[in-house]
Amino acid sequence: MKKVKHWRITLGWQIMIGLALGIILGVIFYQNKTAITTMQNIGTMFISMIQMIVLPIVIACLTVGIAGMGDIGELGRVGVKTLIYFEILTTVALVVGMLFANIFHPGTYIDINSLHSTDISQYMATAKTAKESSGLWGTIMNIIPKNIFQSLSEGNMMPVIFFSVLFGLGITAIGKEGQILVDGLTAIQEVMFKITNWVMRLAPIGVCALIGVTVAEMGLKALAPLGYFILLTYAAMIFFVIVVLGIVAKMHHIEFFTLLKVIKNEIILAFTTASSEAALPNMMNKMQKYGVSQGIVSFVIPTGYTFNLDGSAIYQAMGALFLAQAYHIHLSIGQQITLLVVLMITSKGMAGVPGASFVVLLATVATIGVPMAGLTFIAGIDRIVDMGRTAVNVVGNSLAAIIMGKAEHEFDETKYEAYLKELDLK
Image (cartoon, rainbow, N blue to C red):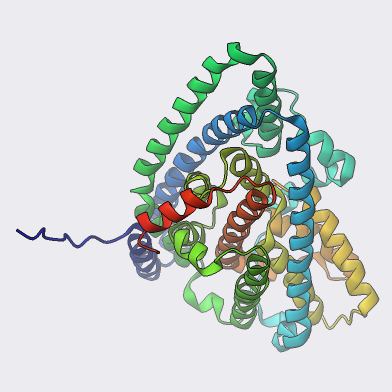
């Protein structure tokens, strides 16, 4: 007897259906405060469940990975290589954003007086707090936690990574006595991945609610005046992913389009929720199955979510030049190079700050003579662009993990081939 194949909608398609339903609900309940509050609460609960999972997974995976690595010299080498790679890629992303803005001039076609402003007081407050702790020393000092439990409660990724690395090295240093901790954390890791699978079943509902809120609050008509800027930003992001990351992957003998197929659900999830954290647990699990060692994955991907934000870099560069063009402010090549340097510094100084991309723009546009009020005109579409830049960040970080794995000879080709066969990609 032949087995009957049951037709099943994959998670990726479920999320896309949730996206479509969210847009429909947003249109139906436009400016309906009760519906907006309901959808906002449902979306927030979904994101909160993801955030609940992220840090336990990072601590368990990173501590076990570092304990398995066991060599502080290897860790230091991986750390330096990773940060250099991140800096090069984010700089290229900034350049791509600037090139697109200079070639297609999105701000030239906008009448700034015809745009509706949006309240940015929440970003102003965040920017003020972030500015006090930005700069090289501020960034370094913020990595070291005064209280690890406070860092955990606030969701500060870099202090948690710093502590987990030291804890893993400490486990290695005490030898056999530390094995019980490794076994316990390995069990925690498996439990958290199981919980992740349960939470992901709610992803279509969470996505529907989050998209519904955005459309219900803004309305589709609000996108029209800034439609060209939105489309151009997405075009720049697609160019960066397909061309720039495609070339980088080819240089390291990585089948890039196969990678995109493997992580397609995580790309869709990141895009629809505009949350990097939503995709992080599954990304770490998949990259280990893909063949990258646990130590590399656990270090590179969480660090990348703070320092390797390629999509955000493209948006920051294009946003700054878009506003300059809209206000008819001509920037020479020298001034644009200065802007590039400022964006490189501020984007690292604000890493990990809520609404970081918009906060970076707040800290940057004043240096090129754009009135602070100008940012109120693009604040309304920040969520729409955020979806794209978050998806790009996910692709960039998954590729970074594989490249670092191959560079450190911590990539298992046999495991990789077996995983592709399991997914029917070979």
